[in-house]
Amino acid sequence: MGLVRRKPEPEAEHPKPSVEQLDDPDPEHRRQAALGLEGVAEAVPALLDRVAAEREPQVRDAMLTTLAAVDSPAVAEALAGHLASDDAALRTAVAEALATMPVSVPAIMPGLLTDPDHRVRVMTAMILADLPHPASLMWLSDMIRDDPHPNVVAAAIDALLPSAGPQHAELLRGAARRFPDDPFLRFTVDAALR
Amino acid sequence: MTRATSPGPGLGQADFEKFREYFYKRTGIQFAGSKRYFVDKRIDACIRGAGFDSFLTWFAALRLSDQPDLLQDVINQLTINETYFLREDYQFDSMIKTVLPEVLAARGGAARIDGPVKILSLPCSTGEEPYSIALRLLEEWDQIDTVDVEIHGADIDSAVLDQARHGSYGERSLQRVPKRWVTKYFAPVGAGRFQLDAEIRDVVTLHQMNVCDTAAMRRFREFDVVFCRNVLIYFDELSSRRAAENLYGAMRPGGYLFLGHSESMSRISPIFTPTRLPEGIVYQRPNTGAK
Image 1 (cartoon, chains in turn purple, orange):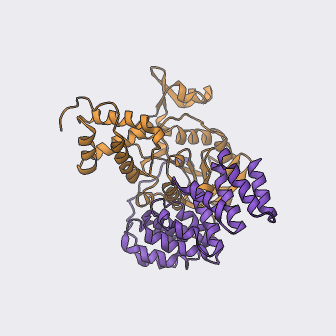
Image 2 (cartoon, each protein chain N blue to C red):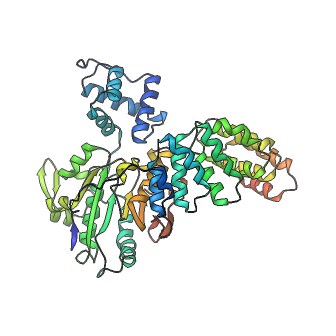
Image 3 (cartoon, rainbow over the protein chains, first blue to last red):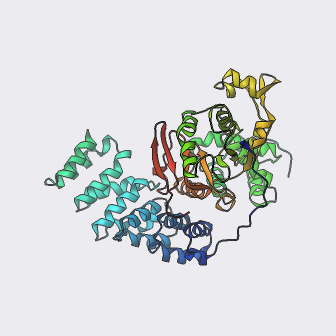
């Protein structure tokens, strides 16, 4: 007993993961397959098909990690379709993945910012909070200044705050003025300006 | 290839961008523009060291030739390896006081545990972290004579792994090690340096590994405790997410992950469960879900 050295063992064979393994009954096999399919273009449709159906959050996150690495407009568009899902965990997981796709997400941003569903626009603010793109602050400012729904404006203020400076004070006051009867928004702005 | 003359002071902006993108694709590590001076100096050293006369010829050889040493050399130059024994040792306190007892309990108790307790240090740099773990366990864990423990260290940099295998350290590296431990476990080798006992070096298994390389990381399985400190901060969002996924796959369900004190998994990936221990936050691979 005590500290022991690992016994030498033959290198285990790890066959290349296949699309079929995405349907393996063992979730860890599905998770490993999803990660191992990074860079396999033919696997993208199968991964996209399974994002909403996968019940294990860790497997779904692995699928999203692999899809985010593709960072193409088609993948971004397909993932953005889940931002309106009734499944809150799926919406959040997809938003987190989209926030790691700075190449393709800007192309779909105009559509997200004007989506008729305000819940999609709230998720868009979440994406912009983490999206490493020079226009992220500008898009958040646009939302705060123009969006007609107070929840979207509050989400955009939350997302802007870590990067906000004195130059944003008037923007925030303007948001509070646009929704004088919304106590939550007023509280958010007051807290931000403090 | 011609002998080096002078590659010139620094890279042009376009060259820097090309290199930065290439290095990111190969390692997952991305350098901000603010690191420009640091990157320039080290690339310059690589170009000179390999005998090239310009960035362009060196970069072409790096990408297109069959000289893997060129890539390894630039990885070694650009990864940051400064560490010392017992760094952020409140996490080792946590491992001994709280985490290992929990691990033993979850695995049926010290008397009935099946297989060794496995601990991974990644990146392990020149060995200070995995050897610190070994010393703390030998000196302070009351179950060390009852339970088998495997300690593994891994790093992307082959040169630091060679130094770790040699296990020779200067005063700065050993500053936090109690004198009694130095006398007991180290031998002076001249020039103010001390070499760790071969017996301890031998029980730490060292691996060359890129934490972002999913296929390679599949070699790591069933770790009970992982230390992955102060490395994810160097990755961009997507690479740190992939690294987190790979660490998850390397751990036993219920296993514990220690990050650096300024790092937070909540900004990287939701797949781990944060657990507050008396000594700070640790992240656990959930017991449920993908096993």
